[in-house]
Image: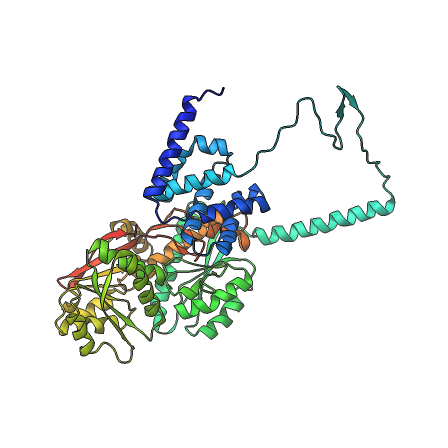
Length: 554
């Protein structure tokens, strides 16, 4: 009779605890991806667990409605495999309580998601059949081994006679070796730079109306490179920033980009261009297999080739419009405790439309009640009748899902019409403050970075010491994003097995919990955009804006 040990009792109790957590807190987490994963392992083998990205893609093809569960499962498998590979079912079960703690601490999973992930991995590992041990005293007959027969040894059952090498076979062998040596040299040249530096192309609008902004962003990128090089570079190789002017017209930008990336020595491209330009060159980045990081663009098409498929080589430092709408819905309900909201958007602006749609979707999750929605065109602007409709709707807050430059006119019309409640927006800078005057009071603004943030004082001091000038409020967020984009590239180059192309792309895609000056960066493989990145919030009163805190949705 089998005696139950205390260790088995503890293990059984913990499994019961997981089941309880999963059934109460984890309501809504679908177990379908776990069943499909077990079937996929039967087809592709257990090694599929060591490649969570591939597993995630296969699961998304079969479980389209379970993207959240797939995301949780793949991130959990990636965390488990960091310890040197996927453990056996017994090893994982013995450490399941500790593993659940790691999921909460390292991945930021809530208790319910961590418990679900542990239970899901246990079920998958339990489905892998164990390899039956060979009977004692039995040795399988294979080439190069003896065979045990009736307690004794016999010669190998099969042998391969060694053929004598003729001159012809010898020449053929030498030719094959030479061919492989040639391929090895070409692969090595493409993976590792022949010079002692990594070249990063930095694109910005350095002429025309955006020239001043472009030059400030280039200076920030160069500052980051100088700091990295002073510390010894990247594994001994220096980082070189090549600044180039990019046209504001998308068609002209495509032509310029195609000519610039022909230089095989370029490791990556950072673009501070506008959304239209970055959307145009994302396709060319894929065609040329050159990683592209955009600093400020939030339009979805910058990294997404279609609704469900990202460009392979396009990444972004700024959060996308889908995340902006979620940030706004979360802050209104959780930060300001306002749920009755009027929604204003510009129907002629692609960014405003994306933010409006995302806010409406996230609002259902966070309990936002849209009392009034106003859509206008940039040419017409917000009229007095629309402003009166907002006031009569009884909204206790207004969300302006617009980008500059028409936000100031919306603010002015709302206040002149008598609306005195809270206003939330996403397009604050010094020019908005100057144009709005007293109308900006009692408004909140979400942005990537704020000059008053104490964690960014060191960056501002370094910039001022190097260039003997301060960064204006209009330039600040874009300048910080340019600076941190270079630091992101340097981190990826340090981790990547090669200096560009596929090797560097994978390093960028696998970025997790990278501490930068303005936020901690993790990349969502589904969108190539930051995942759950913190944002800064600023409050305006007495005619000026004051930094409040950093936050991110739970």
